[in-house]
Amino acid sequence: MIDHYDWAGGREAMLRFGPATGPVIVAALPLFEEANRTRAFTVTILRALAERGIAGALPDLPGQGESLVATESVRLGDLRDAFAAAARHCGPPGYTLGIRSGALLDATTLPRGRWHLAPSTGPELLRELERLHQAGGGNDYGGNRVSPALLGELETAGIAAQNRTIRLETDARPADLKVPGSPLWRRAEPDNDPALAGRLADDIAAWVRTCEG
Image 1 (cartoon, one colour):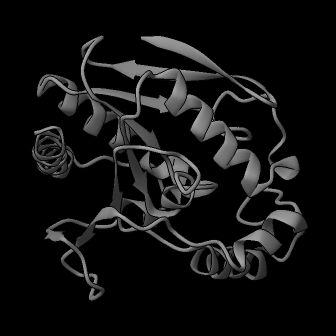
Image 2 (image 1 turned 90 degrees about the vertical axis):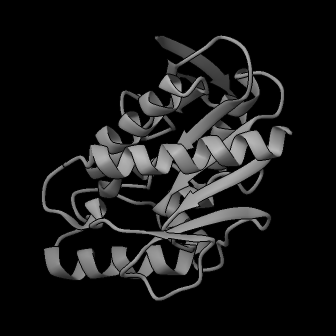
């Protein structure tokens, strides 16, 4: 179902999945090009959660998807404010799902719990953007125009505490759970992994039920 939510900067679209009642998972895609590479995968996770009786939402954020806001005018605070507004629109405090740099966006949200897949901090994202900038040799960052203000915010942007962290088995950093799979966000073109999406949906569903219990 297509829904909309309002935030201080206007109105954005949002996809809704699953039942109309009960806990809701609000998902945050990674920023910039990684969003395109993981959108279908995230939708597959949310559809799998709907099959498990858990509602989900995937909001377009300023500068993402069908948003009319120019990417180069977006600040990190705008993204966080819009995500928090989308979460409030979904009802009582629910749960957030952040993939990669999407884990930066629920820092000002007040969910019952945060679930992060391969989260990346602001400095980590900034290093990746600088690499793309140098490789491209132009004024953009991997095809995206990014404001200097946002780049400055990323230098100190961290991830909220009190979350469940999932990583791929190839990632040496600590996590609550490690799963087999390949990093879709590194592929040259958008791709999907239904088996991994189902495995992650199982973990999210079990986690939500534990939190609700």
